[in-house]
Length: 288
Image (cartoon, rainbow, N blue to C red):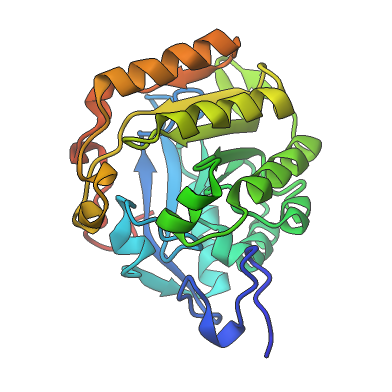
């Protein structure tokens, strides 16, 4: 049986965890998006976001579950994806933001080569990536926006059914640092890496350990983004910790700890972001 090479799971082609169709790329939405970090998403332009359907992790608390778990979207051929990239490249957005792209890596990289886009390309992923695939992104991807979800392997197994998550993610970040350098022009990142972390209720010790390791492995100059926006969904009701929003005291504890580590570049999300009003709507068809 053939194996899929797009993510570290290495699933059999006819029984993939993500649930994708190997002949098509399913896209939930392509839209002008304004909810990324300010350094990549100027308020006068926004990002040209392409939200891909299905996911290699399917976290139980995923707010975009209609895409990641239910597979909402429209199937595109590779040529149609090339045309979509070209339309976004010709628009007035700042960059092309590929959201949850990992499980379509081979087809997306092929489409990027054909599209020959001029805008910066963002690989906006869970961080669960194969090092060999990150290497292939050289000269195709400019900005790596990695979610660093868990340090504790038990949490990764419990919430995302994935083993060795942190070690896999760390290797992917190291490879990304080899192929892109931080380039900030006029306050906007043209190339570089941002490590994003969503603090989960009841698990602030794991969050602190993540930033201990980031400092140890990558220093304090690397860009970080700390998020407080966790919002319970129906799928979370099976877990006591995930039935509630993050407490202000939890968020403050993590933020103060991160600041004590001496990180120089990054963002702390406002607590008011913990609401579903900031979530993208996937109603309607692709409109770029």
